[in-house]
Amino acid sequence: MKVSGSILSSKITAKEAIEIYNKTNIDYIHLDIMDGKFVENKTWTMSDINKFSKIATKSFDVHLMVNNPDKYIDELSMMNTSYITFHYEAVKKPLDVINHIKNNGIRCGIAINPDTKVSDIFPLLKEVDLVLIMSVVPGSSGQSFMESVLYKLDVLRKEINEKKLNTLISIDGGINDETFIKVKDNIDIVVSASYLLEGNTKEKIDNFKNN
Ligand code: DX5
Ligand code: ZN
Image (cartoon, rainbow, N blue to C red):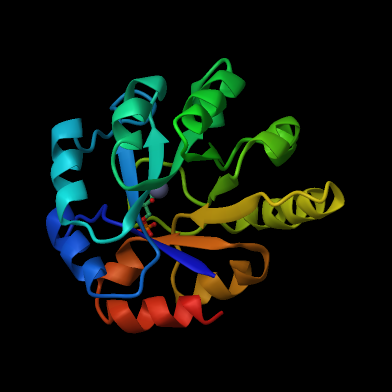
C-alpha cells in the first residue's frame, strides 16, 4: 500500500503539512488543485506550488479539480511529480489530456466523482496508470466517507483483473482508520488529509503502509 498525504487542511498551512510529511515514510504529497470553477473552492497558484516543490522531499501526486487541466500540466511536469490526475467530468476529450500528461513523461490518473458511473471510464482503463475514486464530493477536506462508492472498488478491481491491466486504484475523501479497513483490499494508493494531519502522523502512515 502506498500513502499519499493531502496538504489540504483547515487547521494548518500547506507548508506546515509538507514539513510534517517530510519527516515520515509517506510515498507522495497529494496536491489538491482547485480552480473555483470545477469546484467552488480555489486552492494554490502555480507560484505557491513552485514554493511547495522546493520544500517537499516527496514527489507530488497531483489531483486536478479544474475545468482546464491542460493549463497546469507542463509546469507540474517540470517539478518532482509522479502522477497527474484529472477529472473525467471536467473534459470533453479525456484521451487528449491523457496523452498530454504521458507525453511529458508523467504517469496519468483519471478521477471520478461519487455520482459518476465507474463503467464510464472502462474504455480509458488501458490508457491510464491510475484511477482515483472520490469518496466525497470534491471541494474540501474533512468530509465524511461515502459508503455508497464502495461497490465501485469491487467493480473496478474485477475489470482491471479481467483485462489483465496494471492500472492502480486510489481512493480520496474521508479516509481514517475505520474507513481504511473497508477499502484496503481493493486499493493500491490511499489518500488522506484530516486524519493524517490531526496527530500521530508518522504512526498512521506506517499503519496504512503495512496493510
Ligand atoms: C477533496 C480532496 C481530498 C481531500 C481529502 O476534494 O480531493 O484530497 O483533501 O481530505 P480528507 O482526507 O480530510 O477527506
Ligand atoms: Zn484529492
